[in-house]
Image 1 (cartoon, one colour):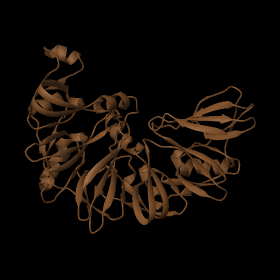
Image 2 (cartoon, helix red, strand yellow; image 1 turned 60 degrees about the vertical axis):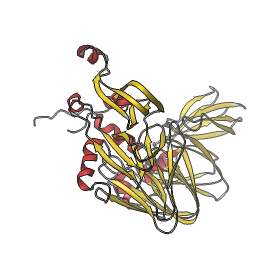
Image 3 (cartoon, each protein chain N blue to C red; image 1 turned 90 degrees about the vertical axis):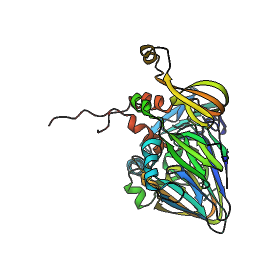
Amino acid sequence: MHFEIAYNPAHSLATAYLGPHESFRAEAQAMVSMSSTVRTETTATSKGQGGFLRGLKRAAFGGESFFQNRFSTDGSPGQVCLAPALTGSMVVHQLSVGRDLFIQGSSYVASAETVELDTQFQGFKALFSGESFFFLKASGQGPVLINAFGAIEERELSGELVVDTGHLVAFESGIEYTIGKAASGWIQSFLSGEGFVLRMRGHGKVWLQSRNPKEFGSTVGKLLPPREG
Amino acid sequence: MKYDIIDSPDYALLQIVLSRGEQIVAESGALVAKDTGIAIQTSMRGGLLGAAKRKLLGGESLFQNTYTASSDGERLFLAGAAEGDLRAKVLERGESFFLQSGAYVAHHGSELKIDTKFGGVRGFFSGVGFFMLRIEGPGTVFYGSYGAIHDIELSGGSYTVDTGHIVAFTERLDYRIRTFGGFKGLFFSGEGLVADFQGQGTVSVQTRNAASLASFLHPFRRIKPRSNN
């Protein structure tokens, strides 16, 4: 199976092309349309995907829907169109064995069945900061579809880069990160409005998004009438 | 009437040039700019009952504006509400076309008929309003999308589309509404309804969905203080 992307940068649409007897998984809300030869199952539990608990972990920490849809074909090929909720681009990353991909929870869209997903619990500091940046770890072989809010920037890291948590989409294994303050002191860091940043070190690819979903959400959200608690 | 769609696909704008006496009818709110010579008349199209039905069933505005040119070459600029594309469909006499109710922007042709069609029982109870407009020529209808517009050609087989992504479809297609797995509907998203299309023709889908954006923004709303009665 493979993914093709159209309408980048603003309103991307991905089409998954499945041959006979192929399958992939997608985040539960991503399906736009599909041919009738494609069968769907909604699962949190399945072989190779870690079962119920991992599904729960994904939902709680990964920022992704608890349920994933599995799309598969029988004897004839099929197509599925996929889109994220927000404006922005998508990219396909070809995963290979030995080089895992860490995906920021809400940036995951879909992946081939040969790709295994697991949640990487990020650490205590992240919880404390109130910013939930949890990563899905994708390993194995095959295409992974990720989305960005805004444009997506791929950077080849060799050395160090400081990235705002709200702008990180994904990065490859081979890169280590520590969580730190944006400025030198805590008060200055708070006043800078940047809060926590990731200090990334190593060799590999990093993908950034040009807009921050939380910034957008809180800008618009506070203009909306209050909701029931 | 001459028209041109510019700034497509992400932020499309419809430019219309009219001859003296020519008219365009547009959804209220669609006006961007016009030459001063073009007169605006606001009406409830189809009379009070017809307009009320459209408002209640189709989610369209109660009022429509008729723009009439007073001299040759006067310009009118129209746009849809969401960021996305615009298209024109030219219909022959007796030819019909279906539009998702919110996609209608404007039309040309005094003989063009627009009727609200009930989209199906589930659409009705979902509160999101899956209603289609049945449009019959002769005339030209202009319609808009949230995101890009992607065409899918059907030649006899069945094809499934999330109802929130349907923009338009051609006359020789039939559809049935059903629920779709994936617990798609968290708040606004129409309970995960899909339409199964059957027949020969074209289905146009939009690559973003207003309900998904609303679902994203919902958690960012402030919480209403509890009253103590």
